[in-house]
Image 1 (cartoon, helix red, strand yellow):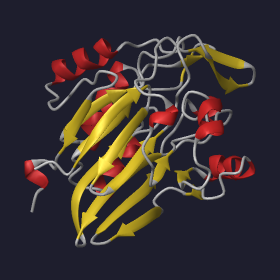
Image 2 (cartoon, helix red, strand yellow):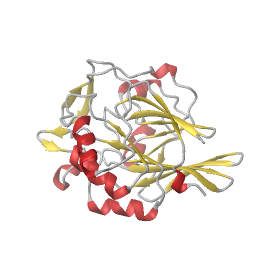
Image 3 (cartoon, rainbow, N blue to C red):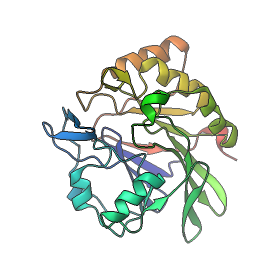
Image 4 (cartoon, rainbow, N blue to C red):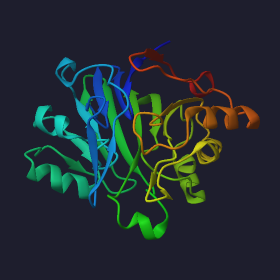
Length: 268
């Protein structure tokens, strides 16, 4: 039975309905042809339109932000989002957002959590590690977090979603699966993004490596064709997943809404 839904807006932006909660991830509402700013004078042009406009969003309970890059939190989001909405993100991003007036920003270090309860439902967002590029480059990029989003009903877990954030595959990310069993679905950030020739987000092979490590029941690939900086197409990931026999991969069209249900194997 569905306990919510996912609307794919584009890039890494999705609108989640989980029980009575409404969650937005990585708000990116730039239009086709506009530039996202990546720091150090680097920019990348958007190639697609978001499926919905920022002013069409419903009231939000929380924004989950993996990191503060222009293709994840852009100038339209900075101007248009309600500044009272909690933004769960890295300490680095929270400090900067608070200075912009988003005073409900909640900084999370790895393995710490933010919660909201309404009636018999609780939404819990736990920050998990990520690494945005090779070690020497990672230190020049904004810190990134993955997240595990749990919906609890009467204290029991009803649904669990893993969001990779802009991480590369690293073997030590296996601790996520050790701490959080029974992941119903995963949003996996792909694209093979290259900055000055250096890989800073997962390509098809790395994405498949991470999925094998985390073992979600359903995989929703995102963040793969919206910007010029992306060099690895979605087909590279789906072909690799097929070659390895990875099941549960569901491609999303911008504007598509899919129901979210717990995996049969994870239901009590």
